[in-house]
Length: 142
Image 1 (spheres, rainbow, N blue to C red):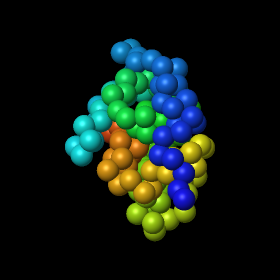
Image 2: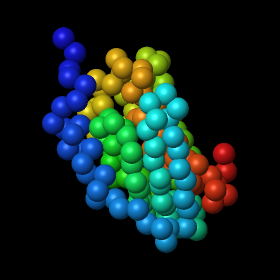
Image 3: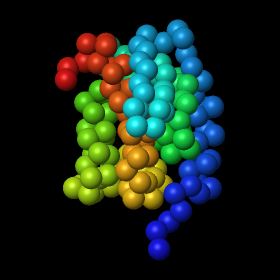
């Protein structure tokens, strides 16, 4: 029997998006929308001269899984570059496709039940897509 899709840990992560309030004064902004489910995120990032994230703010309109993924991103994106975020995003997608191991991003094991629900996976990838878009705007190399 598989684990329940929504559990106490997922819901706790979902409400924790409020720990990362939008920051209109941030240097970089991106919005992203998951076409399948309609989830949406507005992401605000600051980065240092080397392109490493120094601050994050966000507004998330998504299911609990999308909100949980946004919190996981926000908690561990500081100090990371666009290449590291892009690598994590690819690892997550590979994991969902069954072609890779669980991503090396803290807390992602909590989202394991979503592997059985492809319709929810776009919402989980959304925060990473928005972060990549924002960081690419700063001129980071692809």
